[in-house]
Length: 113
Length: 114
Image 1 (cartoon, rainbow over the protein chains, first blue to last red):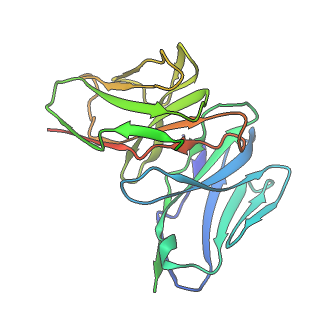
Image 2: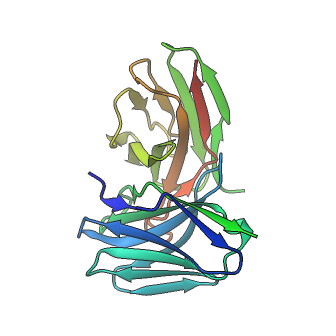
Image 3: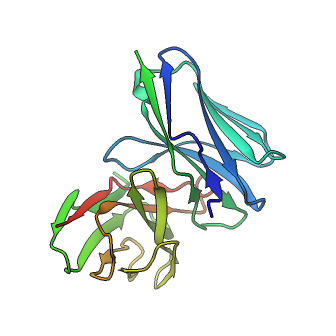
């Protein structure tokens, strides 16, 4: 049973526009969320995270929004660039140090020039 | 240069053979993890270790074994009992001192069983 769901396997966006990647979770014990970016044949790299005590975290072109009541988070990329084309994984964890992250299945973003 | 090393990048084995994938980190991280990635399946946890000489099964541990004799090393053995071993394998590590639960990943090993 998937605890972290990314329901859109793929997304295409024009360069310069906004990319919105969505993630839903079912486990109410999750209180910290992370986004990773992955290029083919490489390991994922950390992008941005958010704690459940916040509803927004911003880092340059990347913003993550958290709606706890809906158990939903989203990653906004503005403006989208061709180099953003990758697979994006949403991950979640509960309040316990060094426990494994629970990953979604990923969304493949294609930014078209 | 601190980081996680996985070797080799590509590995080919015959069906029925055991194979060990290497993972080394010089980040002084306590915890290490092994994931498997298949198309459309995301990252699935095989085993993890929070401290030397201790490890726990993840969601898909069957057919795999690990050891954690040193803090820096967490090798994964894919045994002949693993029914579908061809996949991209990722090792990761984390430390409570950094961004909470941020895991650093290695470059991965693509295993192909012929």
